Length: 266
Image (tube, rainbow, N blue to C red; front, side, top):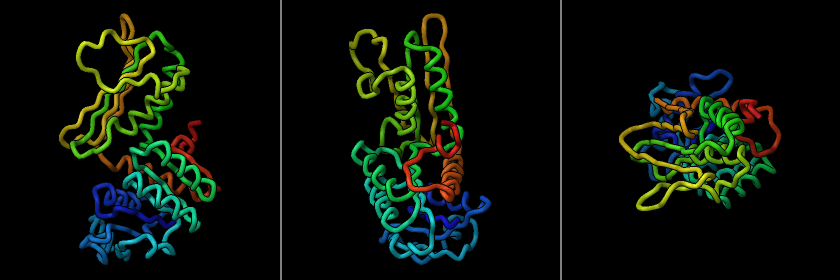
């Protein structure tokens, strides 16, 4: 399985190349950066710090389309959607870990999934996706008697808020409780807002320093509080999950999948 990494010169891109190098059954087929990058033509392995791999960095996916089977994309919503369409038109699979996509962009990924295999998940961590399963179970058992709050923290450079993972956690809990997150979500609180309503799901966001990613979901009622927590200390956890998803796609037909499918948690 030959994997291409777009954004290969970034922090996540370098980590993905390291993860591909460490994994069995896959290899780096291509590495892509912005056209203005000074790293075009440089060996991708040297940029990632894993030694020469014989894969020269290119500036356009069209320049390496023959060199990969699946693309891993942790870029921006607009670029990820464009890459999904390109992969669909050219018989390539794609794994997308980009966050911040709106409903229209998600619908476009579903369209791409009609022609090729797509894994799209706001968090590729195996641990996070197990946490989602636990959240669904907890919500079903605890029901409406428990207040639900989602607290997340990330590094100062993260541009979307709340995180895609936090939103997915909220969606999973809302679905288990028979609610629509769009109707019950409360994003931050300030001033004289009065007591919380029974069915709202609150979100609190922290942006500071170099925090890789921390998520905590509270289920609280009179007399007790249950917290389900996931803390990531390295981007490698996301990279390993993405590479695992890419390898899983080898045996899949066209469709839009998520990490719950990859991990057989559904």
